[in-house]
Amino acid sequence: MSPFDVHFNRAPLDAEVRFIRRHPSIGGNAHMGAMHWRTLVKREPYYADSVHIVQNERTVTLFEGEYRGGKLPAYVVQIGARTVNGIESFCKPGDRIARGATFGMIRLGSQVDLIVPQRSSFEIRVRPGETILIA
Image (cartoon, rainbow, N blue to C red; front, side, top):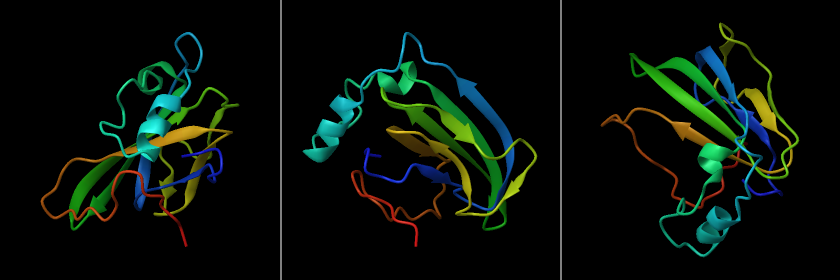
């Protein structure tokens, strides 16, 4: 996400919030410039020299829902940038949330990663560097 993106984060599926874990920064939030530059010029691997992934303030939220009749866990990792003024969660463990509903936000600069187990029935419809728009 760039500073020009909307920093409200949305649930990836209809699910129950299983846990929310906050991790403070280790020595202050690092700059995300290396990753942003590599993404802009399409130079892989995009995450090379990106210490912010493990150093910066972050919140991990586990959503547990269903996909085609089976359980599907989805982890959303909100990572704060150097300029971040906080990561907020608008839900708590045990809450039910609809796909696309706002569950949190990151103030001023961020990265959001979605982690799901690989399934042969998944079809990836986005490519690295694309911007996702919610209608």
